[in-house]
Structures are given as C-alpha cells and as structure tokens.
Amino acid sequence: MSKIILLLSSFFLSTAVLADTPILFKPPTTGAPTTQRGGGTRGISNTSIQLQALVPTGQVGLTAQASPNLYWFVSEAAPYSVEFSLSVESTGEIIAEETLPPVTKAGIQTIKLNSFNAQLTEGSDYLWSIALVIDPTQRGKDILISVPIRRNPTTIDLNDGAKLAQAGFWYDTLQYVTENKSSQVQDLLKQAGITLGGK
Image (cartoon, rainbow, N blue to C red; front, side, top):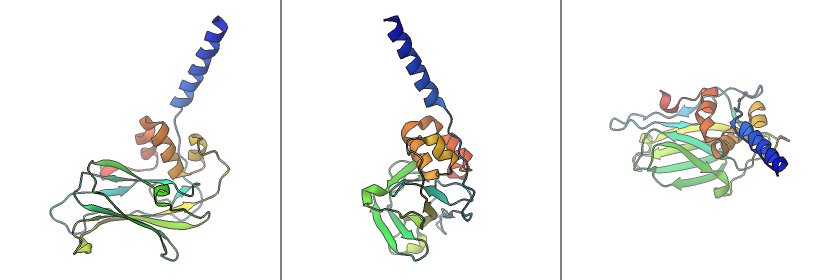
C-alpha cells in the first residue's frame, strides 16, 4: 500500500510540475514582418471602442492546423454586429465570411474556424478580418482590424505547447495555453509584444 501511495504521489507531483512549466514563445526566423491593420475608430466621435487581433508584433502568425482558433480583443461591450472574413492574401478569394452576434462582454474573443468549415492550406498565406459595423449605411465608420496568418507543416504534437511555442507556432500555442493553462495567457501575450487595449 505504501508503495502505491508513493507512486501516486510521484505521479501527481510530476503532473503538477508539468502544468506549471512556463511556455516560452520564440518568434519564427522566416517570413516577412507585418503590422496589424486598423483597430482605431475611423473618425467616430461617440465611441472609444478598440479592436485588437492577438498576434505577435511585427510577425506573421503561424499555425500548423487547418482550422485554428483565432483570438481578438475588444475593449468594451458593443451593440453592433460583427463581420468576420477570411481570404487568400495573394488573390483575395474569400474562404469564409460570417456575421457574428454583438459583443456582450469586453475582453478576449474567440473565432473557431472549424465551426465555419473553413480550412487553410499548408504553405499559404491568408488574411482574417474583424469589422465592427457601427452604421450599416455608412461602412466607412466600421472599426476594422485585418491581419495575416500562414499555415506551415510540422511534426510537433499539437498537445505539446512548449515545443509549439519554441517553433514559433503562435496560434497553436495561444490555443493550447488558453485551453490548458489560462494562468499563463497574459504572460504569453507579453512575450509576443501584445498589450491589450494598447495600454
């Protein structure tokens, strides 16, 4: 009995150590640098809403998945419809285009591409965009963000967050941390140069 207890204690201790291991993100060494497009209020005087895609500063975000989760931030709840689009960067071909419900709570939001049956091809670059539609009759008032994403092949297990992070797979690392290590989300964002709300 004492041997069983000892073995169980060792197992739970190793599991706890593994769970507390910090995820250290290393930006990829290849790929053209990029900047997030949009996110401001585009001339609107009656709102201070800020949108922000959660992607590394100055880098194209990588994924190994055909249908990764996409994460974005909104500074406050907004009674406006949200339009999401995903397109091939080189041709502009629309892969997915969806109208999402208004945001009821400020903070990090998630878009699951598999819920739209949208898939990325290995080696291809895409653009994903979020538009907060302030006035459907005056689309120039939209609050808009647009950022690139690239799918690269890898043999890394998608459940190995540490290796994904070291290989520069941003979207997969953020998804892993969000789903398994929520206490490390803020630290991971900081590593990638992301400050929520620009503050």
